[in-house]
Image (cartoon, rainbow, N blue to C red; front, side):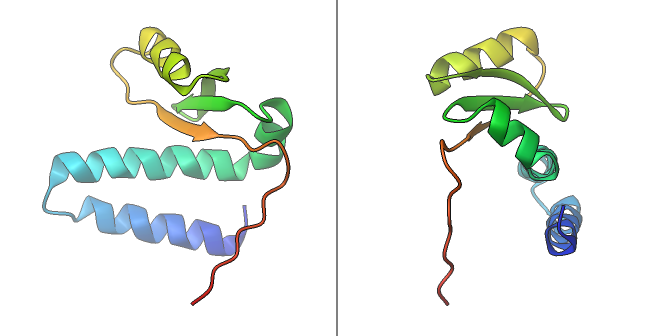
Length: 100
């Protein structure tokens, strides 16, 4: 993972831990951590799940498919006490331009 991404994830995680709304902060921290996993293993995930929705729980892809609702339901059935993070893996490399 690029050093800039690691610093950004640490900064967001740190600020979430000090948030006044602890439930929301914990949820957002979980999302940030799962997305950090995705970023750290993006090449492998992108090749394997190209064009699909994926559900991530505890630093692993636990369900995938073309219908995000079904992917969510599969993940919740496998991990009922967890909050899966959904992501869509594009079919091709995607260029994101930030203008500011």
